Length: 316
Image (tube, rainbow, N blue to C red):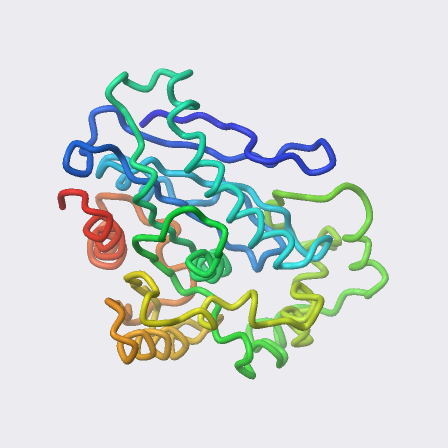
């Protein structure tokens, strides 16, 4: 797998970066070129970075024939969910559609490697799954999204579970001083942040996220203007929404699998091609540590990736 990192956008002179991954000898769509797969990371829109996307999923998709594009996006709460994560994800996809061939021409990509920018798939994990669901609703993209893959993503944002204290945090996380947590608004805008895994007082960003999840105010804190509809991909569900697959652990204690079941049913009723894979006994982030040779990767991840492969027209 070949990789380059490029700035796709400047914010106040500071670059937002995206990784591009490809395999030179991979299949094309009927000889016409390689489709794009945009993958969006999770982290509650507050933490995370492009580096947390599972390597096994990247390599599977590049070997199947995709040019895989993975961006960092501006993180909340320094910016709203719409102005940061959604707008940046859309702008990265637009940048890739318009510039991928010229960028690859300056690299070690084989002369025969060309991008079919008419074929685009989007996928994401957790909050990134929610972002992926919003991409078909972006009216200023020059192409229609061919397929969407949502791993346990956020959706139906008016659901009470997004506006109540999160049970994951109620009993296990101490409360942080609001004044300390609000230091997250100080300093330059952040587009990547590793989660704090220590046992002492966390950085303000992590304190802000866990405190708001514990208090049931996370969603309002990242949306900021109260306009849930424009950051919820399900508000754009229609008869023309692209083929979409959901993968969700039945025992997910962070985001209920019932929301993926609801989305799957709604798309079915609209006549949209849709599939769902409910994984027995698995919690949130069920796929992030799996390797390609793992049986669970074959059982619970490959079906989703193959869904994207089929619906952009690559050989399975």
